[in-house]
Image (tube, rainbow, N blue to C red; front, side, top):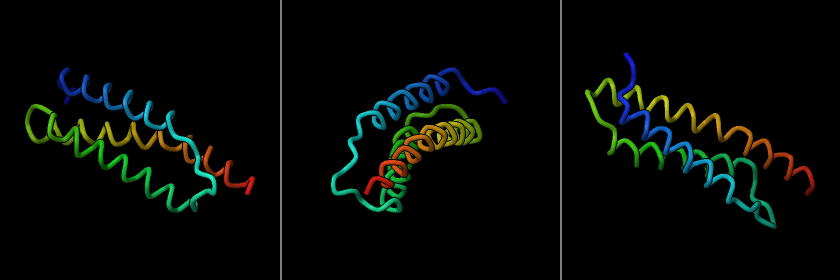
Length: 92
C-alpha cells in the first residue's frame, strides 16, 4: 500500500523539523550521561510521533504505516547525533 501524498508531506516536514532540532543542540558542559541523552532523544522522537499522529490522514492502517515510516526516519537521523555525542563524551 502506497502512502497518501498528504502523509508523505507530513513525514517530509517532520524529518526536516527534527533535523533542525538536532542541529540546534549544544552539548551541555558539564555533560549529561550518555543514557540520559539517549532517553532525551527517544523522548523527542516520541513527541514528534505523537504530534504527527494527530495529523495523519486515511484509514487506520495507512496512518500506522506512515507513523512507522516517520519513526524509522527519525531514529535514522538520531543515530549520527548520538554517535557525535558519544565522541563528545570521550573528551571528559
